[in-house]
Image 1 (cartoon, rainbow, N blue to C red):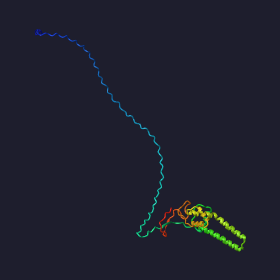
Image 2: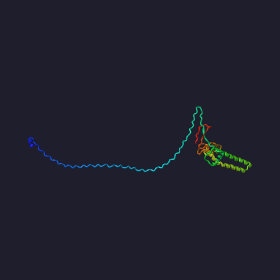
Image 3: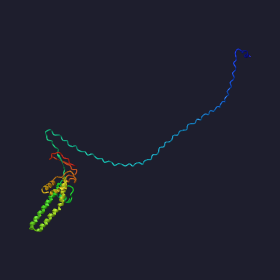
Image 4: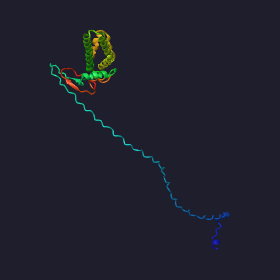
Length: 254
């Protein structure tokens, strides 16, 4: 009633606004159930085994013992003598000449034996003693045959039979020693470093004969040559000073 008494007519009443239609209530969506995600433990990780390929074992190499190397001792050379320079105005004193030491010369009988032993030997070398001993032997034989021929001729009053016999002996001896004489001459020329054909220079009158005599009297060459070693100076010969000569020492091959 109080509300009706308080009515004031001076105030125009606003028309009531129509009620707005209510929106339909949307049905609530059902609450989705929340499921907890199962927690799984991480699967154990297995390491992949590492396989190494088996290596084929090589067969053991046989071990050979190496032969012991020979140990060579180094040759010790003696120091060359030192010569002091002479003072000014004084003649220099040259060292003594070193000459090779020769082998002993063969005897007369040995030379004759080698002469017939090397009957047709045109190679090698013959020393001076062998050559001249053979020359002496041939001279003695020729002299003996000539002496015997004279004696027999005197005793037989010049019998021609004896003369024929002695002539056969003389010519036979000359023919018998012809080849060995030629072989000996070849070896003698080889000993001084010449070809054996140099003996044929003796066929030249006078001059050729003199040349062959000089060559035959020449001493042996100490060094070996294409014909072999010297029979007078053996390989590895020693040297001895010769005080008679005062020259610069030459070099010899050993």
